[in-house]
Length: 299
Image 1: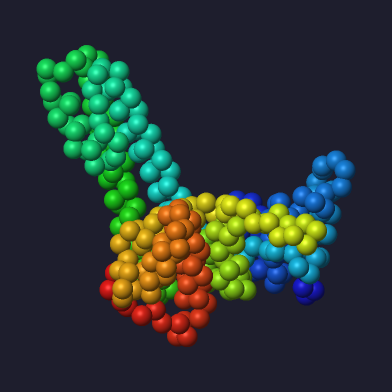
Image 2: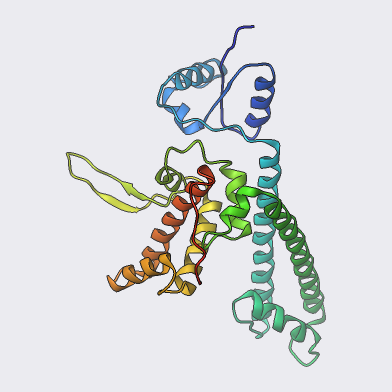
């Protein structure tokens, strides 16, 4: 049988097609759509798109997508469902706070304040809430509680997967990387072998400066924000926690943060730079098991 490379654009169904092609002995080649677009000539139709894909995969330096395993897709689906539930919960809280504000009742921002004040406001018969609005707010409160239970169930599922995954367990030894971030990295990145270096992973996550250089003059702008926004958000949240709580005397990352702060670097720049550094450490831990050991120091 002749081995034929099968090219396709990255899309929701590409990983299933890639597994099917591999089962028949044909290596799949998945190319992001933005890299195929420059090869599309004139108008768009199926034949022109197929020609553009064939042209794209023939390029020796073309970046391709590694087909995900079913385990990665399952874990990725859990993270995406969790992100949707978190967004829905935030919307419910904001809507309830807005309804209360119309009746002169305020709740400070933050989930902790909402969960503490909401039951007392609903049970207080002396406030200005109308019976109809009280029923609406009770429904919103019950919806919020159900979303909290759903998030707890998803968190337990993700944590159980992290405990059983060797790579995820190693990643949790890195400051700023918890079970949620570790499983998200294994779900979206896999083993990290598709990246040549930790800097390439950080660039894929959008944690490096954008460059607009010409005429031999280098010009670096703000962070690129390319790639997976979900992973970038988790890493920046973890880096922000490290900036706030890392020990500045015994932890090597804490000492680095201290040096940045002494130079007068803005706190947000320190957070993004630390997220970049954490991403590089993650790549080293994922790709070099047994060759990289993170010293456990006091945090």
